[in-house]
Length: 90
Image 1: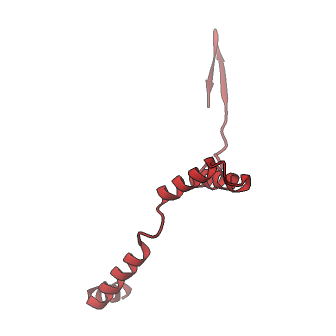
Image 2: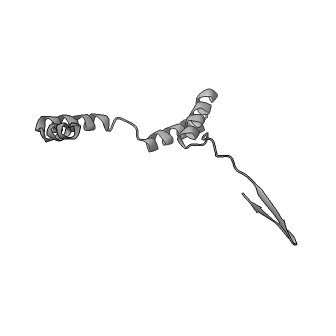
């Protein structure tokens, strides 16, 4: 039932025009892309004329955007002693 209504709505030319309008507004050139934000944070981080707190915040946001603070899964170390040597597996 919902799929049928959705198909009917998408067939309406007024709906198509409105959806295109929303897409254009959402992906406006005035909105910075992820790459542009990374470049900007990097420039602030290295700009010695900026206050230290701003440079630190830029470095934190840059690190967060690149996933530096994500938790790593627990790792185990397995050590096998066989014969003449040791073998380490992580």
